[in-house]
Image (cartoon, rainbow, N blue to C red):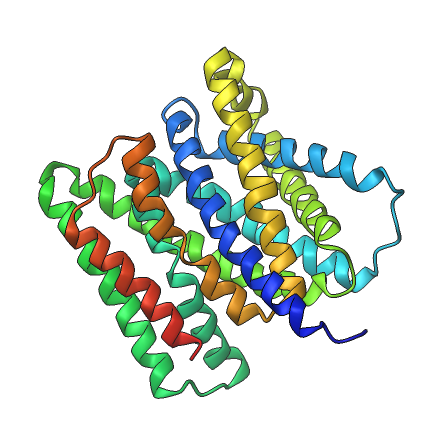
Length: 298
């Protein structure tokens, strides 16, 4: 395998940054329909639509053989990051909203470091520990202000935080697995494989629980279906594919840092689309959390 050119590192970094912006936009679009469907249903419909779209694209030039090891890593990444991680993400999104659920996503890099300590015996530097503390502090600062402004939502916020933390943990593990599998296939093929396995896992679970039909019922209304279609297209091609492209052409650490700037994009987008005001405390917390992510990979 040839080493990526320095130029490709810049392209990969730009792709990761654009991916963050599209993640923020897709989260807001999904929020617009989250009250009409269950997190399970949103994850299943998104995964199926993504698998069909990507499958059509990768089949145009003709499908190529995928190494068994890459299929295994990408498949496990899809089950963890898309099937389970996205279901938890939508559950958190329903309770918290786009800005806060994306803010919780900045815990992902911290989880990656902690997993490396436990399973790989790595020893983080003082900068890494400071970054984790800053990320946690920024999240707490932003979200404690949110809870204090509306005491009646304390229970919903606590549940949303729980789901968001678990989602970040699943996505962190999914990114590590995806990095191991994407080196021998194209970014588009890697994204398709992840969606295919994610959709298969969710379909199997829905069939087992006899809830398959109910997952599709809320999307029969025209406006809901249109917003969902826009959200899926934004997430699949703007979020997932661009991030796989970034992982292929730059270091996983750099891609992770740039991708975790999504909360900063969510602030102005929430104001424009959801007409939601953003406090100085929330903005400062988001900046601190993203700054912590940078230190984690210093």
